Image (cartoon, rainbow over all chains, first blue to last red; front, side, top):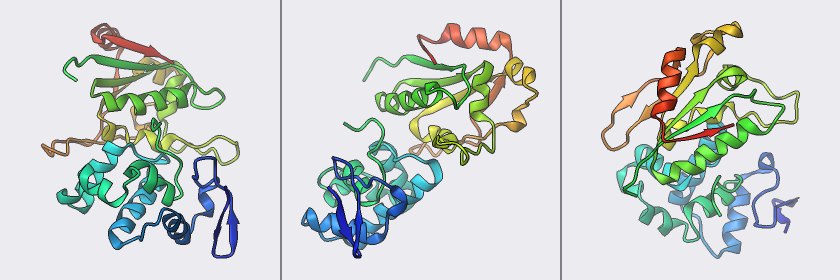
Length: 110
Length: 135
């Protein structure tokens, strides 16, 4: 279902992931979060920005355990665990945060 | 999982033109969730998968070369490259990308897990592997 962001219509796939990663703007995350009735905080943005940087560098969305380890290294050990990440993204840090970040679904994620 | 096996992914085809290289990489990424001892071997045209500076902008293929550089984060310990295959294509180890590995718990680090090996080592490494996937 297409989403409306900043007056533009953006295509998504059947699971709600952005069809074209290059169309991503921060507003995408806000619109998607609003649909999930979630308010994005700085802590959410840390993860979304991290995912976008990871994708930029490696051209894939990281597996959840790679994300967890890397977040722990970059943002501190207290954040590098699934409890913290699921607290932010209850639908799963891999799936939900990647969707907000405009990334494809992580490889191997069902 | 208590039963850790030695897995080897054998890559023998050029990175683009067929789906083999990308499929192999995806299987490695998915398989990494199972905590096995994983190494990759590149032989024949498969060595081109690790050559630096690939540019796919003129083709419709995604450039997945950067993805190899994250394999260390997925627990892959070794990327072996067959020396004879490199030489036959006018390449050396200097033409290949570097892949770092780090253990987040112990902070043990290896700057580069890409290693050129000779024919005897190739045979030995394959013999030591309990599971070999060929692509």
